[in-house]
Image 1 (cartoon, rainbow, N blue to C red):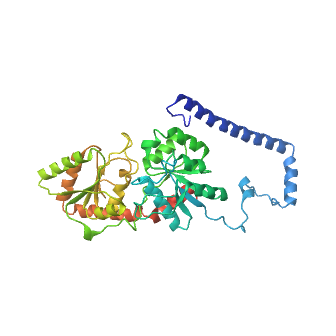
Image 2 (cartoon, rainbow, N blue to C red; image 1 turned 60 degrees about the vertical axis):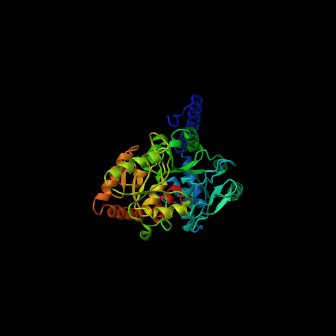
Image 3 (cartoon, one colour; image 1 turned 135 degrees about the vertical axis):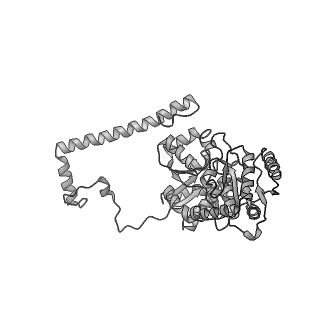
Length: 400
């Protein structure tokens, strides 16, 4: 039974009945139409109806067989429908307004709106009061929840995109929904009953930021799911070889384990007589970009939020690749979507900083290895991660 997997018994019963009743009605409706059709054919009534339709010009008088959809085609002379207005948000309420600072989801939806606007669509990020934290390199147009609701009442042709099943305020105001999943650590656990309900009543289409998340949706809900990996603005995130400092290793604070892991790596590299500078990167996006451009290697300490899935959307990996760094990262969701081990970076088992240290020694003691990995990373970014490449998937997802 679809949507059966939820933690509460009463929820399971409610979900089951809410799925079965519409299905029963649909089956009854289908069989009723077939029954009426058989009666019309057995009494030759359908011929009389068709004769009247021919005289009225509703159908043509020929023997060509047609599908029912043939009679629903739009008149070719009709003007094409205007482009939809598109809104993206994860606004839950006044407290969680959908404008969190240093949030990967904030950045992804901002990029989506930018891509759509570049393609000639009217698109907005929706936050509770229309404000945002000024931390990105390029913030797109924001509107308030009240303004969004006003536009919805005046327009039928809209698309509403969210990545968060608990974005209550935005979802309730959206007549339908396009769900872009970026984090299984929440979707597979706390949000599952909510998502199941949205699939039945609101979700028009789904996208996933990784193949693993895509497969999860297809397996659980028996629906197609578009793959849209991390978006990145390659006009902003670029390499700057003149800023690069030899032997500088960048990293970010990813939790209480970070310093311990760095110490492990530092001890090992020093034992191998490899002198490296370990440089912690932090700040707003412009500062992070500038710091990444100074590093030869970036070590991602992100171990993920979920013990099984890991991190759904580790943005720093794709950003450091675009900035010209060689990346060494843990083999978790998101990272394995972007890094092909020993081709454009290095993946090691999670919780194994010793393997990161060994990888560092190898790439610094193998002639030409850093340059090879940098060039492969640059080529993959240019061919697979630009707005131009992502556009076809976005169109498919949003039914554009």
